[in-house]
Amino acid sequence: VGVKVATILSRKGSGVVSIAPERTLGDAAVLMARRGIGALIVSADGRAVDGILSERDLVGHLATAGAQTPTVSVRDAMTTEVATCTAETTTDELSALMTERRFRHVPVLENGVLIGIISIGDVVKSRMDELASETEQLQAYVAGSY
Ligand code: AMP
Image 1 (tube, rainbow, N blue to C red):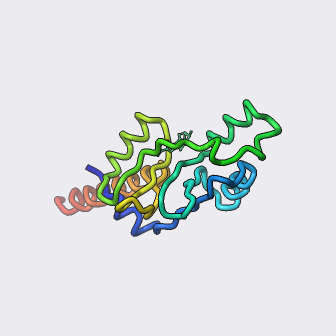
Image 2: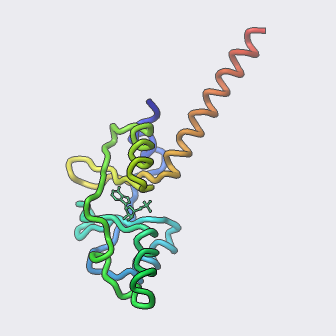
Image 3: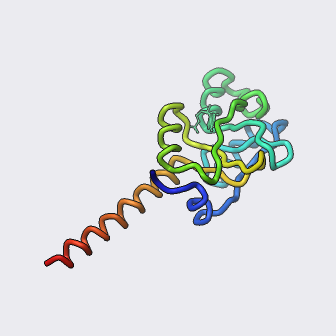
């Protein structure tokens, strides 16, 4: 089953770094580097999701546009068909989605409005926390039975 997205967001917060579609890949690279993140939500109004732009898209453009890459607009490089989830989605569902579709970021929406983003790192951390507490409980159980 795993843990609900709501639980992860309550721990890590609902902040999402977004960028407007008319900005450039140069701006996007600076933002990602400064914030230490691998993807940006593309949004004209900071609420609705117009697209997503990840490091992978920057690398793809470097391979084709080379030195022109920093001047390419975010709109021309972003993915527009964005898979999203809700606060009720579980980490197991996200693991399956990220593995099948081969992306590492999923925005969280509530009534069409952005309320957070879950990265593959958040999913892995949540699973590790779950396993650690399971182990602790089993150790307490085993120790108690002697
Ligand atoms: P990532 O693994 O998140 O760096 O993304 C790999 C590719 O998938 C990039 O082209 C992204 O624009 C795209 N992508 C990332 N997240 C999503 C998502 N939730 N839905 C659709 N495409 C995505």
